[in-house]
Every structure is written in structure tokens, then in C-alpha cells.
Image 1 (cartoon, rainbow over the protein chains, first blue to last red):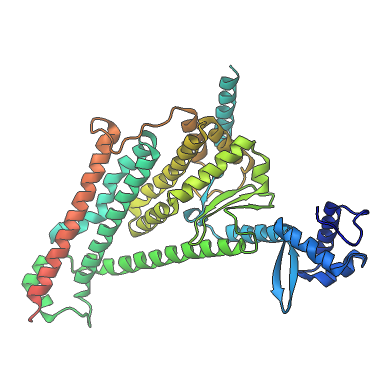
Image 2 (cartoon, rainbow over the protein chains, first blue to last red):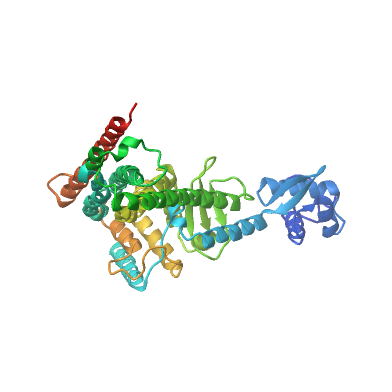
Length: 129
Length: 310
């Protein structure tokens, strides 16, 4: 466990990480460590905030980009949500995406659905026998 | 040159029986390679012949780059398609070229925009997107191939079924299935008679990935369940193919095939079965197609050479 010079007895590592991450999520876009420190309430040292953010970066929970001489931090879960929205847009806009992206399954019509449920049920029965 | 020049335009019809039979009777890997190869050769021959007929057709147009000797009666007799067919070939060839360009451009655009959408994520092979729409895709890339799957789809699968899903998508990427799909797509654009081969290959490529996943997992049932569950949870998503077909759709056929025994691997079907006869018929059609387009091309070169005063 890395020691925190600030308040090692009062707050565990996971708690501090959750605190920093939730502060970062409230930001509109990428935020600096200084902004996070203010948001958290000022009882964390700037270096501690940096340490926690770096640890979160190692876990893939946040990403960072260089802005001037410091870094701007973004929560990664937001990145994933953003990627999901962008991907949905790509899929919705392309009628013939099947040619490029081999889809795992295609849609079912009602007859197919009945047939499929029958097949899966039958296979389950065989397994139980 | 005669009527041979028009043969490659209709010979793709000889591949219809094998396109229909191969998906049921051949190992999916054999079927995919066979049908893609047939489609590619036939499309190339068909396009070459369209080009040759077009050259003949342009003889009528003012300002064509062909030599003056072209209008000689003897040359006219050797190339009998200078009237309606020749002129019709001009827009047909243009349509083929435009369709190819659009298909390739769209293919590149979908791949680029899908990679761009994943740009902010860590550079891992599997990208899990938090989305309540269940889907999974294999996304081929120049630097890195990626498997895109949504949390909604993963949530409805058991651990073994998730492994089956990833094995299926990795099989698509490892065997470069997108190239087969693009090839048959371009072939179907070149000659509409090749469309059944495109439909057949998009099915056999899925079956190929299913069989590969089943082999890796050691369980055909896990793959069947993964496909079945994924299809049931994502029903209602728009279908790219024709809906309301009388025969069962691709998903129940894939599940039924996986619940049955593994298909035998043979590089070429025996000539004494129906699929063997169909495969040999398609191979003969392809060979005739290649020969007659080569014959027409050579004849055209010879005629042009003879008609040129040089």
C-alpha cells in the first residue's frame, strides 16, 4: 500500500480513488488536477491528487491528454459511453454495414424465433437426459 | 469473336446450383473459398467481355479513338455487336465501374469511422461498449483487429457462451473473412447473376466462424446457445436481408447445424453426389467463361492490329 502523507488513517485508497473519479465525472470535459483538487474540497494535497489520478490511469479508469505544460484528465467510463454513442451512429447511418462488419447474428422474423426457441429447448432436453 | 463474347455475361447461372447446395453439403471453409473463387473469376470475365463489347460499340460514336480501318466491312463482319448491344454495353460498363467505386469507398468509410469511434478507448483487442443495444462485430484494422461487443449482449450470455462469442469473432478476423465478403460483393455488382453467390458466402462465412469457434471451445452446444441467445435478445433489430422468406432464416440454420455433427473436411466434393455435380458444373461454367473472354480478347487485339494501318 502506498502511504498517503495527508490523511492515511482516515481514508483508504479505494475511497480516495472513488472520490477523485466522481469529482472528475462532474467536469464538463477534460479537467486538470488542480480543478479536481478544488472540487474534492481542498483537504487533499495537489501531489496526492496526481498520485491517485496516475493510479487510476494505470487501471484504465481515466485517460489523459497533454494540455500545455500539464495534463487534462477524463474519466474512461465516459470515453466508453462516448465510443458507444459514436459506434451506434456509424451503425445507424450505414445500411450496408454487413459487408464490412460481419455481425454475430442478424435479425429474426417470428417464424425464425419460434424455430430457434424449439431448437434451443430441444438441445436443453437432450442435455438433461 | 461471335456469340462467345456474350457467354461470360450469362455463364454465372451455372454457379447457382452449387451456391444453393454448398452451404448445406460442404464444409463452410471449402464452400466459402469455392464460391468466392467462382464469383471472382466470373465477375472478372464478365467485366472484360463487357469492355470488349463496349469497344465495338464505340466504333459507331464520332470521335472514338479507334483506327479508321475499323469501319471496313470485313472488320464489321468479324465483330457483329456494333449496333444495339455495343451501345448498351457503354452505360452497363459505366454502371459497373461506378458501383465498384461506391462499394470500395463505403467499405473504407465504415471501417474508418468505426475505428474512429473507438479512438478514445484503451488500445485493447476487445472493446466493450456500454450500450443497451445488443450487438457484436469483428472490426478488421490495419494496425489492430478489434472485437466490438456491447455490455447488453455480454450480460445475457453465460461465461462459456461469451468465450464462444469471442472465438467466433476472432475466427472472422484470423481468416480475414471481410475480404471474402468484399470480393463477392464486388462480384455481385459486376454481374447481377452473381448475387446468389454473395448471399451464400455471407452465410458460409458465418458458419465457418461458428465451426472454428466450436473447434476451439470443444463444445458445439456452447456456440449454438450463444448464437441462439444473442439472436433472441437482439430480435427486432433491423434486418439487412429480405424478411418474410419461406425458408428459415440464417440464424436457426446455423444453430441447427451446430446442434448436428461436425461437417467433414474435404477439399473438393466427390463427383458422384449432387453437390459434386453442381460444383463441377460451376467449375466448367467458370472455365468456359474464362476461355471465351480470353478468346474474345485475343480476337479483339488481332482485329485491332489488322485494322491499324501501322
